Structures are given as structure tokens and as C-alpha cells.
View (tube, rainbow, N blue to C red):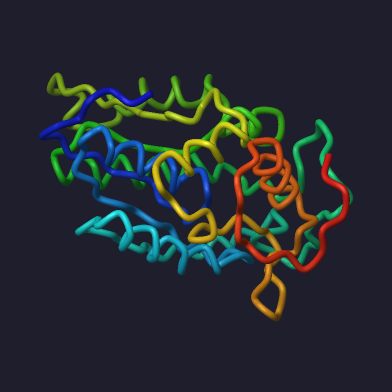
Length: 234
């Protein structure tokens, strides 16, 4: 799933969500020395920043940068503006929780830090279930960014080649849940909910909660995350 990385440094985009946790843990398992980057973009679900800290500590990552970037100045998403988070279930349209060009922006920052560190490997936890909903999670985007990374950097122009590792790219949420269990990760360390409740629980009904709950149910893996509501998943 991950090529061996003994002796190599990789910069992992660690949001604090389940997918980024598993992707980063897979890179650790493969032997990479991890520098983790978390973007605090003033998102509605900023609870995931605390999860990123917890995950970094659990994985014994020595260098973890939490970078402030206030995307509320742009808005355009239910995660960065006063727009209600949808609770009606999943469909095939791009949801209002899409943050304009988020992964393009985040990967650019990850690339900048990787070049500064002399690293050539970047880890991101995008996965198959996000294809239809989020354009910047699709395989075509990841492949195109890998080419761009070589064109846009001094390291690339001098013959260095960057690799964008997306080990969960073709996995379902159930398969990701099973990987978390195999890796000995407590899923509750991570945070997926787009609309955290005042009591600290996950809403249970936003798209991200529905995908997560359905995945763990299919996998038969226990997730200790507390949900405020547990309507039907679909």
C-alpha cells in the first residue's frame, strides 16, 4: 500500500480526520520519518485540530506544524461561512461543504515545506468515496499535482522528483476502518464531523458523519466516537 520509506522524510497533510490519521500511520509503518502539517483554516469543525495534535503525539511525530490560514476571509463553503451544514443525506452533487480549491491550496503549502526540508515525499489521505463530491480528491487531481510539483519548484527544475502518496485513494470507508484497526489506532482519536455540537459530540447526520458511521458499520469495527443523532445512513 505504501512503498518502503526507510531513511526518507515525508511531509504528511494531517487534518485530524480519520483518513489523514490512517494515511500518516501507513507512512510511519512504511518507515518514513514524518513531518506533519495541519492547516488551521478557521473551519467550522476546528475540533479536528485537537485531534491532529493527539494523533501526532500517538504516532510519535517529532515535528508537527499547525499553520494558521483564515479561509473565512474567502467563505464560499458551509465550513468557512455562515451556511448551514446539510443533514439530509448523500447525493451525487458537489456539496456546500466543499471548500474552494482546498486541497490545491493545502498541497501547495505541503509542497513548500517539503522542498524547504529537502523532502520529496508527500502524504495525503484522500479516498474513493470523495471522488464525486470533491473534485480535489480525484485521482486525476493528485496525478496532475504531482506533475505540477516538479514544474513549480527549484528542486524539480534541478532534477528532483516529488511523489504524492495517496494510499487510501482507492479504498472505501470500510476498508479504511479496517486499516485503522490493523494499525492499532483508536478511531475516536480522529474527528470527522462537519458540525460539532455544543456538548462536544459529533452531529451524526452531516455527510462526513454518515460516511464514517456507515463505513465502520460495514467493517464491523467499533468506533467510540459519540454522536448526538444517529439517523439512517445511506
